[in-house]
Length: 157
Image (cartoon, rainbow, N blue to C red; front, side):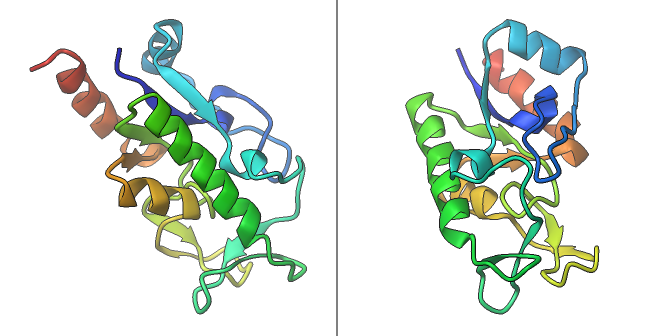
């Protein structure tokens, strides 16, 4: 059975930096969950970061992930990304549904690294690694594209 990697916060788990969730609950996700198709991950927690934790953004110049107070948490973000990739490889996952704008999971936009709230084009650490290994990454913004693609693949059409 084809599986999908999904951000834990989408399932209502309080794993985000602010200790909250960003539930993306709808019939399709409920069906996928009931069918056992979802492999759940929070790369930042898997990388060893606490909940709640200090906000972090990717520095555009260095590529490092830096907290608002200036701590380099790049190693934790990379470790979490590697864990997500490991899960994909273990379950032969080709698709991931990850939280947009996150420094881990953003697939098309991330915060600009200045902690000003401004977003720029870019991908988070996990999204970059997964895409590098051929895993298609989707977000809540293009969820319907994943549903259409997954439905076609799952039915062998």
